[in-house]
Image (cartoon, rainbow, N blue to C red; front, top):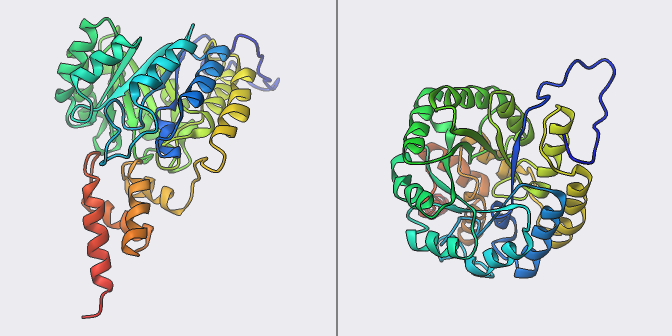
Length: 358
């Protein structure tokens, strides 16, 4: 339950299902939310939002380019400010909250990791496709040697059944991950599917390794999926203010924390203060860029497509004069993974050629 708020509970309710459970929240507004503004957060934006999250008692705040350390590039889009500046800016505001960054091996490097640690990073979250956990080993090991909290991220977790996903989680734990996440990068999972995956990880991992959930909202299930994860044994949950993020966005942090209050969980977050940050600071900074569960975003979840493909698909649709929905449906037949953004152009060109008269 929050430090300052008491949830309203109907007299007909039984004991809330998460009573006494401590749930660690990581807010990803300033990382995953960067996708919503095409990675154009300024240093002032980062200072304002991170200060507000710190005041609200959010225990962990993630900051970098939307595609993690080293993501600012032609392939993923150039950020307005370099990661080093964003990390330093957030560090100055996060007097109580931990500072986290994401790293995708092959996008970010060991040198990026070391530089971020020098700027005051507390937590490194190393992300791989769900079948490639072994490529995180070097970065997780280096993170431990640098004294960071180490987290493994199994992206596109809908693409593996629970038992195989749990085996990949064990690879990350054996490499030094202290937390391993089920990551619904496509927003394709439903609560019962989240529950089985989280339960499988909880069974396969040693008790000292925690389980987390990162939920996207492409099927409208972001917050329900996060709650299902908590009830299945996850004690680390991600969100972003107003649900900012790739695709239709993430579980909204302020909604998730309010719901956890109602479930009896302990987050240490002042819920009203967090709602104010989302409604005032984040809404003002991101006016006109709040995520929407529109046709294309919904199709990402329905077809199981990586959420950060959304902006790339929209640009390709405009460039080649084809429908966004046609691109997403065609991608669904290819089952692409993160890092295969070039396939979007190939698909758009093929669709455009079909429209040409013979």
